[in-house]
Image (cartoon, rainbow, N blue to C red; front, side, top):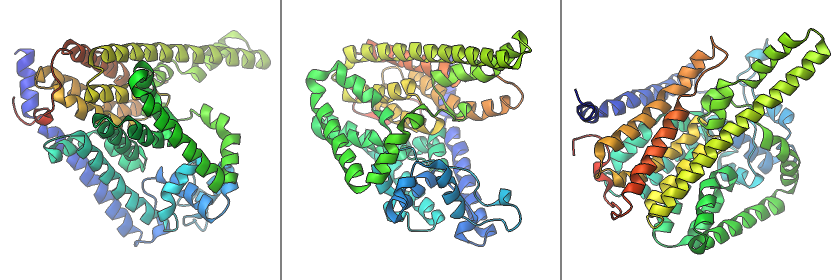
Length: 451
């Protein structure tokens, strides 16, 4: 059996992936319905889309008082606990006992003002619907035909499900990237920059766009001006409308910038790969225990080794980022006039080289998939293999590593090397086809039939 025949078979039955993902969505909504029913539809006895609580809290604090405590996370944790029902016997069994910290700039809290006066669950339900609508809108802007088929594949992508399930704001980013693409395709770079400026609620998302602007400054300087104007306007809104929160943001900026206490198995970038393969705390503790029995010397040794291992983490991440910049430069040299190809590369570079690419952020890769779908006609089997690899590895590795870490101190984040190879080979094919005109019909890209 040849490789082509295997891929041909996989393409023919790829719809099974949609069916499996559909089951996941059905279970998600069924679980929500059961939770509401079991709690007699009492709003403060349940929590869904938990990450939304950070944005909901930020909006309440800035709208109803205590804006000066927005970045006081001890206060925020208690405030969030008070939003929900408490156990009459043991506080450990209160409905909510954790912290969802608001780490975005103050202006971003304004987005959630319209629903922050509602009970949390109603706000979360509405924003769940808004997130699905934004995912649909972004898909509509990125695709030119067969919208429902493309949108089904976007929903089948596990990072999309994670973004909705967690209550994260990635659908907003997805729609903003799609809007930037539409404006650039219409040769409206200044307007595209203004829209891109709204990504400053997560400034790292501007990484790829910034690199593209530097490479192509002669044509993209209006984009940079648009981003600058949007940034100044948003900063002015924060300073004028929420001065106390802005002061807190400035004071907590350093600690929030260094915050990295994410569950590393949920991150899919070179930095997480290095951290999971070489866990600094465990290596340092093992070395310190073997070198000295004196407590003071052991502690000094532990700190030294931990710092050295973290340096190795940063070197690995830095080297991979440089490789990503080089691949993007190659893409720019060959396809700089093809907005769809370049915008797909921007998103991929942002995720690959960004510091906090958690599983839900990889929903943005669906934009790359939709934009590069225009290239499928040239080598459909190869492109299908690349898309299937990215789709599959992000579907399984997060939970796989969660289970592995229960029994092992180290694991390999296989998504990183797989995505690295996918990105490298995609750039190779895109640059090889530089003499061909852009493909404007992505209708054949999505695997439901042989083409």
